[in-house]
Amino acid sequence: MAKVVINSCYGGFSLSKEGMKRYCEIKNIPCWIEEDKKFKSMGIFTVWTTPPDQRIESKEGKDFYKLSMEDRQAYNEAYSAQTIYCHDIPRDDPALVQLVEENSELASGRCAELKVVEIPDGVNFQIEEYDGNEWVAEVHRTWS
Image 1 (spheres, rainbow, N blue to C red):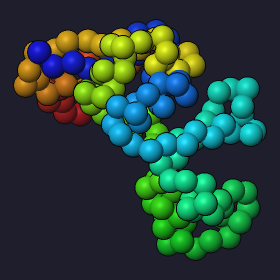
Image 2: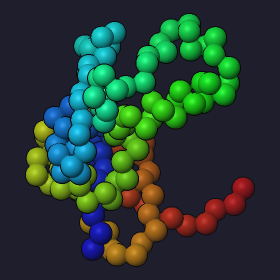
Image 3: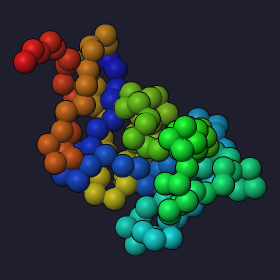
């Protein structure tokens, strides 16, 4: 059986700061968690894989929009290479599964209740959702 992590309540999939820190520990990825100054009350944070003195210079605000499209794309690629975003983690990642099995409450982010679902090996699956409440569905063909 394969294991997949889903969010089992309305709200949406997310990992907590503690969950992201533990995920990085399991994967042996160095990380620095930085709370967003503007949205701290909402629990918004960035997980960096690069020490503060080696990070790409911030292009927040209007300066970013003065850049050429090529420079914006290069900046975004460099930023993505230095950060981890929970929505980019494959839901069947063994480290994510381990994290949720160890402590789903600690792992679950704001408005999330993460759980592990077992599906048969070899199933081509996708995550379906309604208002953030998720389930695993087998991929099938559709036409329109």
